[in-house]
Image (cartoon, rainbow, N blue to C red):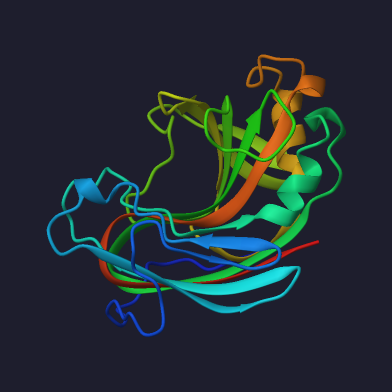
Length: 249
């Protein structure tokens, strides 16, 4: 695993620009291997005038470049407003057929940047684990997040208590666990404020949770990694521009 750490907050940037992007609540771009979602699932907790748009820059069978531009203001700062993200449909379809005790390596690179004003947001991989093979994220029992960026006051579920210090491939992370009401959630949070260039094996994070022995309550051989995604969760801020490149395999 390779990480590059960049400390400090986001700088002032450009406003929300629609350009050739898509701004509908559930707008998507779909390619051979990926689906890019706008996903404004939490916008009802934002103030009037909140907006977000996504743009697909480029895509191949193994990588995708995209931009999300948003302004949500500072209403209800503890609530996530949206989740612009990429779902790796090709890889998810493959690994979802194998129990998590025998997951193959899932190498990935995530390079990203953020600009904007008073941003509270996370930048993370988002994995879903459930009890049957096949792609899905709805109704699954477990959510596993890997936080590469923690901007402003953003905090993971379970952050009210001290995180457990764990190592994944010799890199230290703070592990928080809790529930979102529907799923048991584990969040690996970078001990650096921002890892803007990450290279690692996502399967090792699932293995680390198996080794903890207190997160998964079922036999790991009967659980499946059903959904692999990555993006950003904005809590508050204005004139934000998030740019990302994801590579798998």
